[in-house]
Image 1: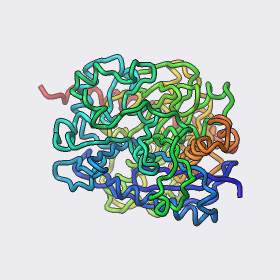
Image 2: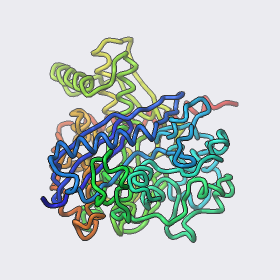
Image 3: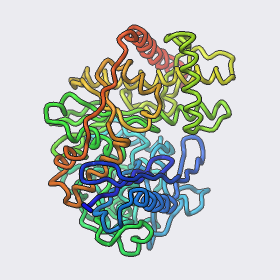
Image 4: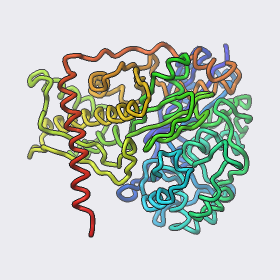
Length: 526
């Protein structure tokens, strides 16, 4: 059999593995849940050892489903959320909370415990912050590292390796200290063109001069699509792979999705197309030929996913997570079944009431801050017009209008990017939102641009498979691998009859932002 590759995608709640052939066909796929500890409001933690076990379970099951032998898998690649893993001597787990067991050694990507530290970094106005749009987010790694050093000095002093989750998985699989250009540039403020790569003066100002020592950042990071190591012999049985399987360096999940949706496009299309990688959160990804820093947009990062391109990321911190939150508020358990039941009921009500469904109910979806276009991690959600209705139909109305708000947030990002000179004619949507028919419909109808969806089942996994296939030498480089493995996207046609309706909703959306700013100003403590 021709060589195949394995791709692993670790999200907020599960690890997913897929086996792909040389042409990008998915031969087998499997999922395994991962644990998450909700500590306090705005805080969340993982157990990296349990994540590793879930990865191993998913990889073995995907290989079984594919019917390929361990020897046929020539490389494995990882993408993951930008969660922060802390390990001590001999790889021992170290707690990242004062009240946590040692096994809770990973600060989840969406954890906002380091809000004060993020504000302090922003207040420095250091030139390095241009890489994160001028505003440091608590979801980035530097504020989390500052928080650890200040609040848990014993953990900090015991640390002998601190990793982005995707890097941790690549290091664990290979036994080598493999750090990716993608993770370090996108989440740690590493700059390839800086002497030594790091803004050492900034690190000194915020008492992180010893960060490289504690994190074991001893070598320059490695480009996406490469990897000098093989699966460590003592991990072969757990993963169901052979010692001849290469390990590719990792990527942050949104960038894997960008590679899996944009990587095959010709040069001219990369100037007019963007990707929307939408799941628990949502990211609008751009791939420019030259750097154009923008306020409240992360990047641009050279070679972060597409070779020779500058990647930028504008996002919403809570989208799928917000819909789950609404379901919990109404006493139900979020699941695919629950979401499907709500979507089916909304479709039935809209058939009776028409397209202008719940017209006086409006939502600002910034329940976990506003990444873009305001760069305000302190922003909060707003609900206007909520009636005294706790019924299931009341939930459906609230859910629908929140879906509209999520789409309006993406439109706000896209229009802000256009106002800054970006030509966005086509938006390639990928991720878990494609399983939600309401969001799929809204992205087509509310954004005033052409929308596509991948032909394959999982563009994020495919992007990681492209990196693994390049690492294995199945293709010459990332561009050749992308063009061989990505299938033509499927267009989603908008309904021109809905334009006026969503233009009205967008005007209301912008007005609510203005009102929130006024109210926040009045509410500010004296």
